Amino acid sequence: MKLGVYARFTFILLIVGFMIAVQYNTVQKPESRDTRDIWEIRQELSTEKKLHSELLSKIRDINEMITKYDNLQSESPARALNDTLATLREKAGLTEVTGPGLELIIEPSLEAVAFGQSVTSISPDLLVRLLNEINRFNGHYVSIDGKRIIQSSPIRDINGETTVNSVNVQTPPFKILIGTDSSEDAEKLYNHLQSSMIMDDFFIDNLYLTIGEPQNQIKIPAFDQTFKNNYLKNTSEGD
Image 1: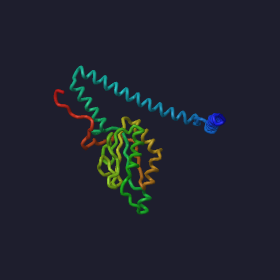
Image 2: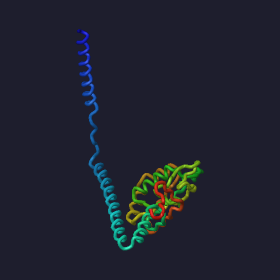
Image 3: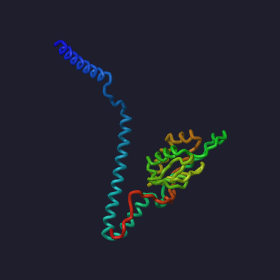
Image 4: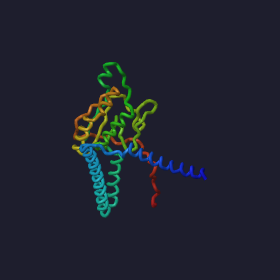
């Protein structure tokens, strides 16, 4: 009889102790509050609005393409298909692009040359970081050392050599060409790169990044390798 009373009493004490522990933990670790000031919130809101604007622009472009395709299809189905194919080839990087853009030059820093430090290559990570900065500000068409960047372009280290599209990038100096859709985009990209920390990243690796002034005409070469496609295949005639 006493054993049962002790057992129930012990069980009740365990429950009370657990509740006290939960309450103490809640008091000691309150829910985190948003401590950002008004300017940080405004900056994040501005970023989200910019993303929203870019998405709306892409939707508008796609709708215009669909409308154009529908109109041409009723007049000339062959022309509609050819126009669509040309647009897709351009977006895939399979055609040469000429338009506004920038020219970047990557070369050994003066300090590295003065101290006799050899610069044999640029690291893949640094190239990828630079490419991410370019993509953030609508640098849609990029060529690194004459090698066109497309969606599936690999930038990696192969046997100690930095490669783009599995082809070695030459020892600096070499050029990076960037094409944009408008002169305004080229100017924004130029200002962003000038004020970003990416130039310091290059300096740490004994490299110097020269950012050329926006130009009205930059020629970006086409992707000149075999385009690998793992998901689509040709169908036989009549299918």
